[in-house]
Length: 319
Image 1 (cartoon, one colour):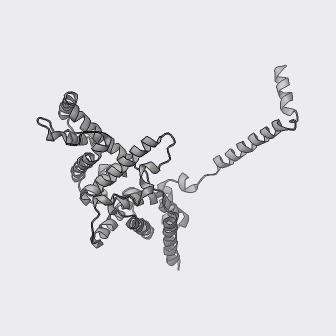
Image 2 (image 1 turned 90 degrees about the horizontal axis):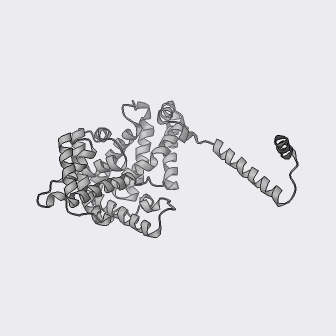
């Protein structure tokens, strides 16, 4: 019978030669995959609440895991706000060391990310006050090459697409850098870091209405600078005779602030005016670019510095 024949084949000793070597190679590869699949990193499988509870109990590994988890986001925020790679390193180390010092007092009224951005923002403000020179548009954060879109591994992008990606990211950085700090921090927190408007309000200690007001202005300003790279209309629709400010309206719509009546009017305007439609599309693409800004790879020297600082603090606490 076929079943018996199959069973007999499975019991037969493999022949020697290339066939037997291929079987051995396949078996070895499967074993390796199995081993890799069963090896898990505790820092990625434990959620924030578990790590936070353990860190409060003095678990050094948990505290270091939290620090490692949030380093990229804090680094990106510091870089966008300070406009300098070295300042961003300081923001990361000081923020995460402050987290280690005050983790026991953190009540959990907000998310860990909101708490850390609040700390980082205060440190950025101190940096700006101490600096003799404000960052200019020309600085554009090029020193942080690891933070640009083109550095994200993407085998599907051809050289032309990669070149366009570089232009877009440089345009975005150049557009964000000269924003006034109140507008820049709102844009970075909302559209790059992905916080909700309410979370941004908590970080900045302002009302949600104030957050959205600043956000709409920041989005419009950044869109105007990025538009040429996207091949979109540069001038705001409101600068054209008879056209409303659809860019601001569209930003309001994205934040859920448009009434049904206002939304219907905007739809009619977009349907009859290609310029307005293109302006809104460019805002949508600009926000999408912000959303896709990758978290940077943390330099090993910075990661070691943060780890050493936390361990030094804990060692002092245990004495």
